[in-house]
Amino acid sequence: MNATPGERISRRQFLGAGAAALAAPYVVRPSALGLAGAVAPSDRVTMGFIGTGGRMGGVAKELTWHKDVQAVAVCDVWAPARERMRSGLKLPAEASYNDFRDLVAREDIDAVAVATPDHWHVPISIAAVQAGKDVYCEKPLSNTVAEGRALVEAVRRHGAVFQHGTQLHSYPGTRHACELVRNGRIGRLHTIRIGSPPGRATGHHAAQPVPAGLDYDLWLGCAPEAPYTPARVFRHGGLPGWYFVSDYSQSGWIAGYGVHDLDIAQWGMDTQSTGPTSVDGKGVFPRDGLWDTVLTYDLVLECPGGVRLIMTDTSKNRHGVLFEGTEGWVFTRGGCQAEPKSLLKETFAANETHLYRSPGHGRNFIDCVKSRARTITHAEIAHRATSMALLGGIAVRLGRKLLWDARKERFIGDEEADRLLNLAMRPPWRV
Image 1 (tube, rainbow, N blue to C red):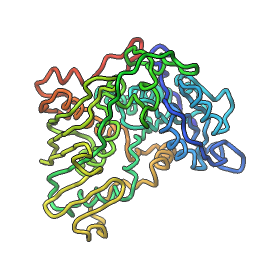
Image 2 (spheres, rainbow, N blue to C red):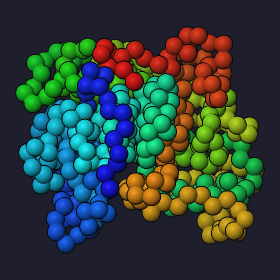
Image 3 (cartoon, rainbow, N blue to C red):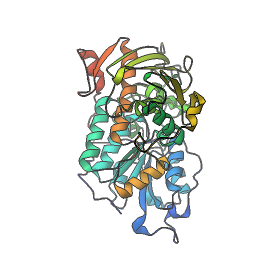
Image 4 (cartoon, rainbow, N blue to C red):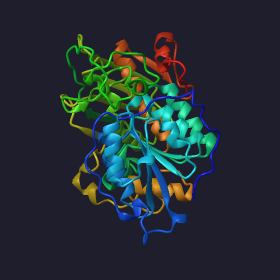
């Protein structure tokens, strides 16, 4: 069931891809390897995996575990990670690519999973949908608001199926919490409190020679030229360094981690196709060093319906999403807690709101690739949740309240803030 290729991407338009860390061992069903006795080839979804570092380990396992998914190719600019995944999936040497454009050009691939550094999520995803592929892309969707909107339009224009890697959206506990809120079981929703992990700092790191097996120019891609150091590209202190460098992650950990919880807040408020009316924030940033994104932060977003969303690092609020209403509260981060506790046993009548029921995030994507239905976290949902995080990052960087026009996706009366909605890309790359 190969997709019909759409307008193909020019080789000069995009370069880059890759993830930084080696993945955990891969466990896949024989059917994922295309072995006999599984699912008929006509009913398989063939997949390529772009960015084969740590996060892709979990994504690939979730997707290839299903008997109707067949792994076909892998791509990464870091050869050891790429070859480890290729070997784990038992793919031939010719199924391994350094340049993602070579992978998406293959007409025998139906869909791709993207788990690269954040600054390449949108360019790679757009390249894939232009080549007729469906896309499962890790979070956060984009590095800027303008990039996210470009991805939404590309998905719409090419009729692609898109799933965002905000997996909490597929948890039954998350759905029940949001259904309680949407059906008025906690009374009128007035406040949402989110606690999300703080950022990290590091010192200065001297430039080093680029290691053999790393295509560093492709790793940088559309980002500015910068000297190579392992703390920029690879894991340092337990996490990839690029999470905390603004060239690759404009809002740092507010988006890199917090988008999960902002996504759930949007679902509970029924605001997945819009955004806040204002955002105010303050934050503490590293004084110097390679990593330059926000450490601790306090955000206040005014949302439709008079809801006030307060987002801080976890030193001030519990990790997760707390919906506060006039008659009770609900807390979720995949599970569901509530007061009064009787809410946990609530059921909903046929005429009440019943939210999207996912069989699992990966399974939902595969089902939608086959049916052409919208996924549970389709491109617009992904864009709006990520936009909230990016707006928060802009607010803490500027240190003032910003008024937001969610329809136009522009700030109101603030040209300085508007300039941060998009970033110039290193030529010749663009979206």
